[in-house]
Image (spheres, rainbow, N blue to C red):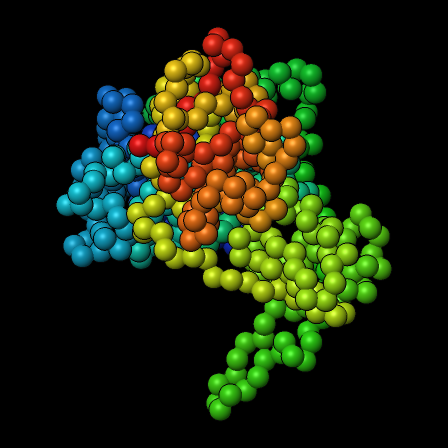
Length: 505
């Protein structure tokens, strides 16, 4: 029976395990269990059908009051009846993790009992979804180490895969990045990635597997919920079978990446001055390989930017591309020897006669360790109910306030996408400042506003996935209390408009 013919989740999971070469490894597996249908079915299949030795791990985020407590009770009751070891992390009572003494601080850095700030308070300071994802991963990894387990299994399924691919395409990701969730990324494995949500629900009903429904998933506050509840059902009526077409997109992305790698290899060279050298008994590693300028210019013009981008990625690992970064790569054709094209905050591409070489600077390390790392994805649609604070800046949604204080920015909500990126500004970033007709680089804007050179690198921008900048947020308030500048196209012109509030806390 082929994979497409299999409809039973148990069969599909066993087949996936066999294809990934995991069927002979029945050592301890950690299973992330929320209490929802996906994770409860996965736990059942791995324990009852596959016969693996499993340890369940559950995180109680206490985000939904009694509903969160009911989730934990269901998981505890099920594991008790089945004789499954369970580890629980309660963010308001971290000592319940069961992690061995002395290891909790390593397992959950900055999030242990006895700190001045509770886990709950720490998470609510920033983007809750991102914080929850990071905390869950740290906890699962700590449980894996405690039990000397080989793998961590999560309940990601085919519908999650579709949502991931769709969002990447809609956000304007490059073709080579139209990839989905990996089936295996040791120690993480996703045995249900070929199982649909409907198959999971049918399986749970047929085998009387208990589960709870997170009612917040039925609200369309976040992009995934919007796709799941509104967009995908409509697509199914308009384009029957669209899921099978979309699920193949990563295949095309992989083919595109192979072609890019082939072309990039043709223009990449190791110059004698870049090769490794022996010093005593120590042999230094070679630096990044150069790109041959003539070979690069011989490519069709439309391919040059893609190849240059792939060369930078392959030699430096740089992955946080903005639209401005990509557009600047076209300038490589015109720069003279010694001139530089900057990418991001740390990458410089320098022309050295007949070659391009990369100089990569270390990230600045003058940030407090407890600061949330950037970039951060900000879900705008949920801010009306749950304001978010990131790096001392609060983001919320409300009605326009004509008497806004100086230390607050207001952006028109109807011109903003549902998701924005909060990141540091980069060389080449441009926007149209409030009240101006033409665009200006962020660098020039900061100079005009007399931001000290030592503090400029702490300036943040709020941008869309295509690189459009809606606001520049200064590292400190100016004399008049100004905390930043909004873009002209985000200005409010009616007291009836909804706005995104940005305020220093």
